[in-house]
Amino acid sequence: MKLVGEIILPGDKSISHRALMLNAISYGKATISNLLRSQDILATINVLRNLGVKIEEFEDQVIVYGRGFSSLKEPQVALDCQNSGTTARLLLGLLAGLDINATIIGDNSLTKRPMKRVTDYLLSLNGKIVLTNENYLPAKVLSSKIKASEIHLHISSAQVKSALMLAALKSQDTTIIHELSKSRNHTELMLDYLGCDIEVNDLSIKLSGKKDLICKDIIIPGDLSSAAFFIIGCLINPGSAVLLKNCGLNPTRIGLLKVLDMINAQYEILNRRTYGNEICGDIYIKYQDGLRSFTIEKDLVPLLIDEIPILALLATQIEGTSIIKDANDLRVKESDRLNAIYENLKKLGGNIYQTEDGLIIKGKTELHGNIVNTYHDHRISMMLKVAQTLCKEIKIENDCVDNISYPNFVIDLQKLLK
Ligand code: S3P
Image 1 (tube, rainbow, N blue to C red):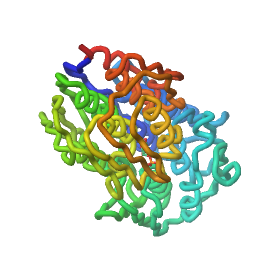
Image 2 (image 1 turned 90 degrees about the vertical axis):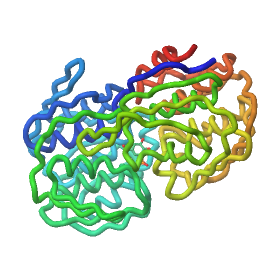
Image 3 (image 1 turned 180 degrees about the vertical axis):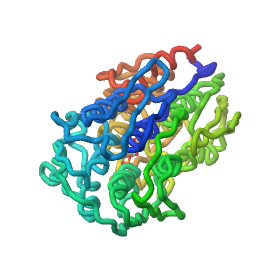
């Protein structure tokens, strides 16, 4: 099979969450275009509505009305973040330091994901949150008053960093956050766009709630993490050529493009433009022979953290040994992704080994049919659907999860397949 044609990418998931939350705590009215309409984003919309935020949904736009932090009222129900780690972790920061009490819950998978990584730091800003078994949802956020502080993060996580920034906005004094390594900076860019008192210097972020945020219209760029499935689909199927339109190219998200450079894959970026503070463009890529194996480690990991499942599939189709390390955070995503990748690719005939913090994959191997499982994880599901383009006999169990980040994934993939 080959992938041929063009796709207009759905809105970026990370930026969509932030566009909703940050406009809700700004003053005025914002029209958001190309907002991702997936299950995770619907979870954020529902949570904000349950907090009293007015959000109007139209077919191609969503309007958010903000009244600063006074938009947020004590909720009458538990706030259900469903499967969305970003909703839950950012919400912990959004609510910390307000004069309200709230309970945050999630689905089976989210309830197993660590939250202490956020709340420990929120505690140092004087937030008050009680977690179940000191690490998990349900969480009770209690009324508190934020005290600005200086924080050195010991984990590279955009969700943790963003939760802290959202909490810090409730103090007039300056909070300083030092990152361990650069993670996606959409919150910083959008806060700046909305007029926040924020200054970023390499790995240090200084911000305060001194200036009111003002609602602004936002166009959301497409999601490179979604584009990744087509990019790799194209590189593993001879005769493929795709144009992926409207793709976010924020420098803190383009680890995948760095891997393409590493393996000597050629691609073109066309129509480079900016939406707000975010860079966007179209990516054109064709199938190419003779790609080199790759190593992903250290500071590169946060720049492609969600692309590792599909990069592992690519590794099975490249000559040589590819190595992924320093990626232990993948064990606490929507599934234990290192294990899910290992178990599935092994079953399909991949020459793959699992280490504590990564994978070693020897290529090139011809994949064969078998029954595989998504582990209820959208990115594992989409990776396996791309694997099916190499081998029709692959049967996927529990595959109804793409709607978490990309509801039209199968339709778009079918459109490209020739
Ligand atoms: C996200 C950050 C990343 C990423 C997730 C979305 C965000 O998680 O894996 O899909 O929107 O901030 P971590 O912050 O846990 O690395």
